[in-house]
Amino acid sequence: MTITKEQQKELIEIKNQIAKHFTKSDWLDLGYTLGAYEVIEGHSRLLRSLSFGDEDYEGNILEVLTEIIKKDPKNFNEIKSHLAEKFATPLVSDLISTAHTETPKRIVTFSPQVFTIPNKQQNDKLVTVMLPFKLQKSFEAVKQACNNLSLDCAKADDIWENPTFIQDIFELIFTCRVVVADFSGKNPNVFYEVGIAHTLGKTVVPITQSMADVPSDLGHHRALLYYPNEQGYKDLTTEIEKRLKTLFPDPFDF
Image (cartoon, rainbow, N blue to C red; front, side, top):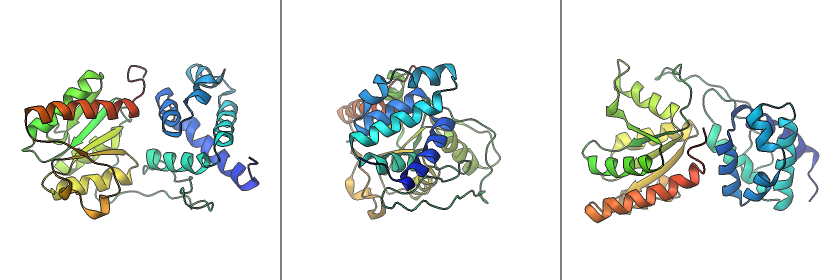
């Protein structure tokens, strides 16, 4: 495959985004997602130069990205889509074009009017759970999965740091890496919070007790169905743990 001049320009922007934000876990996440794990792990310098902050890191990024794209030309758009979903936050300009067009988006930076951007760094071990308060057993099942992987887990009523409840919710979503959202009962607050998470570029893992509770606008997202009984909660823990392992390939390496 020959990479076009326009694609080369986009690769520079992609490289800049990766150099600014990627951890080792992010690289492994990308590798598993694209079926290119061996390209990333097999490169002699990429992860080492990342760990030690070596000057050749950005050059290694370009080498690996080029190899991944040569492995499968479709990976070019898949990389862009992956980064747009993962890092499209209010503090990160959207430099990545969508997976369906070769025309780069405009650079967009915006400031929310309803929320205040927190002075906190992202917690790469944090899973935020959004669900109706009455579904405590569902939360406990998700929390157990996080505990099994040594990940942090929190829901909105666990904290009280701001004058308004919605600001606490925003900060939880802003600082977490993954959001688990329970659509059971079609709770409007949960849908609102999922909208925030998607806008901030967070990975959302939907769960539900009934597929009928998943609205059509979110129907293209795969939801994990579980049953509200003892075995169902155990199965939920198992399935959430499996999903988190794909999102945190090496949860002990932070």
